[in-house]
Length: 151
Image (cartoon, rainbow, N blue to C red; front, side):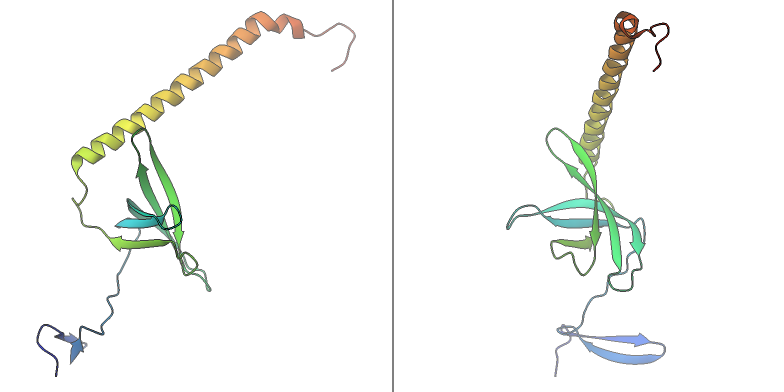
């Protein structure tokens, strides 16, 4: 006989059942937009956990797949990466995450890193535009069409 801590009585469609929790399996229900923690293999035996969001499901017959976007933030950059979880992804796991599990200060830090990345990209774009303008102004005459010659 099982103890009260090891069993639970549940009712399904009017039928009461006693479930032995030692052998019960928890089935998670996920929807697009649900927050998750993603455990990703990094090196030989190293795994890292990241905050993620389920962004889609692919109902393939052989390998139904959950598509997850996760945030990998380091000291100097923040990247949003995509991982596909199915029966062929042994190096990826997910668990549900509760709202508020991640600190607001972490969100602010990630937004700051993303803003820094945007600024860096804007500066790189401005530099490329300046190079083109310089080329057109000072080198353009070297590439003028020569009369009578076809391109």
